[in-house]
Amino acid sequence: EYQYYSDSLGVGAMQQGDLADPNYFDFISFAQYATISREIVNPPAVFEEQQPVEVGEGQPQKFDAVVVRRDPAIKNSDLPRIHTEIVGNAILDKLIEKFGETASAIPTIEPGSRPDAVTFLAAIKQMVNLFTLSGFAWEGGASMVQGSSIKDTQFSIIFTSPVTFWSGQSLAAKKDVVTNDFALKTVKAMATRAGYKVVNDSVKYKGNQEITTFSVM
View 1 (spheres, one colour):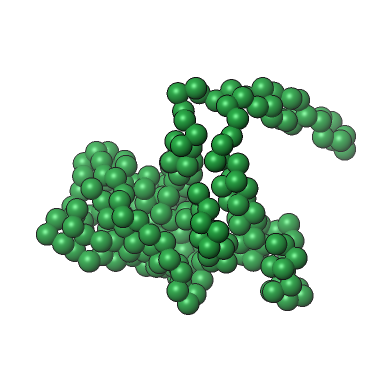
View 2 (cartoon, helix red, strand yellow; view 1 turned 45 degrees about the vertical axis):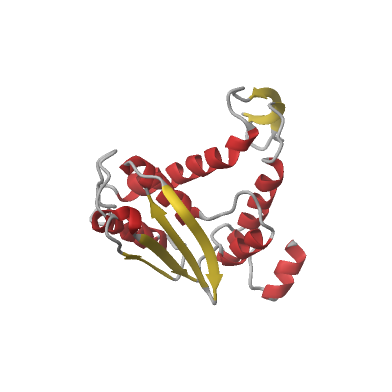
């Protein structure tokens, strides 16, 4: 896939190995999630992992083989959900760590408080702003179609030219088990902390936009 992807961009359009290059990040994100989706379906509960050890400067890297045993209570079918939870919480925690003490902080929602739709949307909007500020997309926004209650409200997030545009489309076309829907993963973490659960979620691509819709209950 890399050669096809590189050729489609044209000579000089991508700096291989530079994760700050949006085009390269897009491909690496595809490769990462294609691998995760393949391996997460029926992985071994016990496996050997090569972990790096400290070596002197200029010395070749060495690795130790470490046996990893997964919690036997975790079923293979649980892994996609757990992956989503880990990634979403990691992104949300990073945004809070980086911006929490600034004027750009995501509005605080007390744990388990189950805020109304307007309050929850304000937090989503600022999360989207921080994604955009961090270089995830050219621009982004969030809105809602309000119902009689928050459970009847549909939220939407639209990113224009996100850095995962090609990879997101490609993973969706492959119907992979997990995809790089980072904004949705982060919203799910926000919702869980607020006492809600995201339902009826969808990520679609149109033109140069990534369109995420969801409700909460």
